[in-house]
Length: 293
Image (cartoon, rainbow, N blue to C red):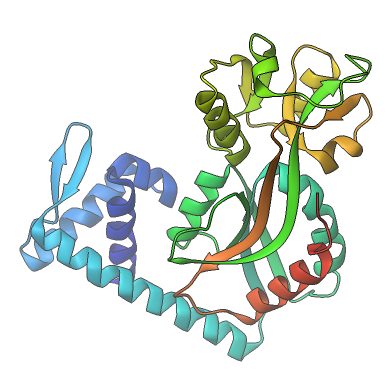
């Protein structure tokens, strides 16, 4: 058994699908299947039960999965420590949703990298669910995410900012409107980010609590699409107040009751904090902790 086989096995466990694991690992499905079969053959055990829709672990597979989680974490910790010891160029992998990215990334690229030239920053944009999943799978070192409740115990969160989610409308539409409730938006065409984004999940939850079925015209993963739909007065949407204040053609209308979200820098509790992670955490805290919505 080698490290590659163990990483392949772990990926199949996480996705419960050889095809999805292969896509995540950027290898072909047959190559991954062969690697798993060779691992099973080497030890004379069956690790997975194959089904039409995916795979599930056998008893032997569950035991190997528990051990692999510990081993892979230790290996990653050793790698990060060696990078620090060697003082070589370090790769820092950070996940961030588009709304937060539009507010934070310009300054991160401008100031953080300028003063940390030995760090290579790899940014993955995506919805909160997607990047938190990648963090748990050790595909990311840290993530900047919005939330309204305490996070899972396995995650360590440092609060950075607090933003208000407001209703975005085209400028000139109902200029006298001082605030709006979700009940007033019943039947109004909405443009939302996709369901993997935290803001969308929170908005839909509140619509459901109010017993309202929203009229969703479009869902997108592109922030620019959402903003342009609002500007064109095709639909209304929901954005951080800071994003609307920096946009011509969109007015911010507060929600009643208001929605505030906390933005935190999050990492796994049980991972080694590399020097690059420490530096990034200090920069984010110093630079963005004053940004309150």
